[in-house]
Image 1 (cartoon, each protein chain N blue to C red):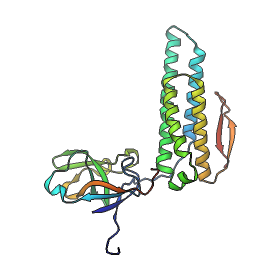
Image 2 (cartoon, each protein chain N blue to C red):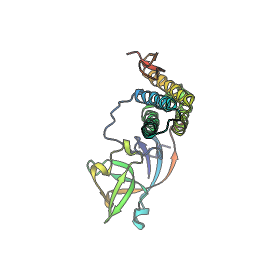
Image 3 (cartoon, rainbow over the protein chains, first blue to last red):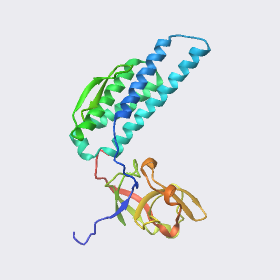
Image 4 (tube, rainbow over the protein chains, first blue to last red):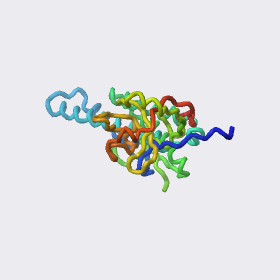
Amino acid sequence: MKFIKPPQTVYAHCDIPCGIYDPHNAQVAALTVIRMMDLINESGDASGTVPTHNIARYAAVKEEHAELCKNEVRIIWGDYFKEEHFQENSDLNEITHQIMELASKARQGVDRNIGIELLSAVNRFAEIFWKTKDVETKRVVSPYKPEEEIIYPVL
Amino acid sequence: MRFVVSGKSMEPKYFDGDKLFVSKILYRFLKPHRGGIVVVHDPRTGRLIVKRIESVEDNKYFVMGDNSARSTDSREFGVVEKSAIVGKVILRYSRKYKNS
């Protein structure tokens, strides 16, 4: 079939393929979600102008960071990971989808377990990311509240 | 005409490696309309790019990538003339990466 010419290339491009990807922002966003859940839960059924105002602020930050977490993960999933990464890490798509679902659930409620599940999924995502770069990782407890475990690259 | 996509600016509609059929004839009879995905010459370099028509004004076309955060398009190089439009994407006939 030599007479059939191969298709011509058409570019769906970006002039700035910056190549800067790091799951750290998503991890910090997941930690922030947990922290905001803690602050809301610690506030109990507080009434009055100031406590109500504070809870509104915590909820707003929780919303923002859950969405930020999703966005950061989406960018790495869509722009960084390639076919071979999906083949080598069969759970990558599932983990990504889990993060989307868990972050949405975290926006809807204040169940800390959901926050922890979200962080755990984001940590797994980070673990895969660093593995594709042949960078070892370690588990450390964040030296700030909510003092939960996160994956760090050993650089 | 057949084209193969290089790049990510049309995700999630078209992924890197997708092969597309593009009609050159259609726009001889019809006007390119908003929402249509077209192959167009980049007015700066002449390179062929694939983008979606976001708006049309006075026969000038504002084109953008669906993945707007990862696209260089009319936001940067301005509107394109009808003469720069090569054709309309009719269908995707192959996808390189099944997981995409």
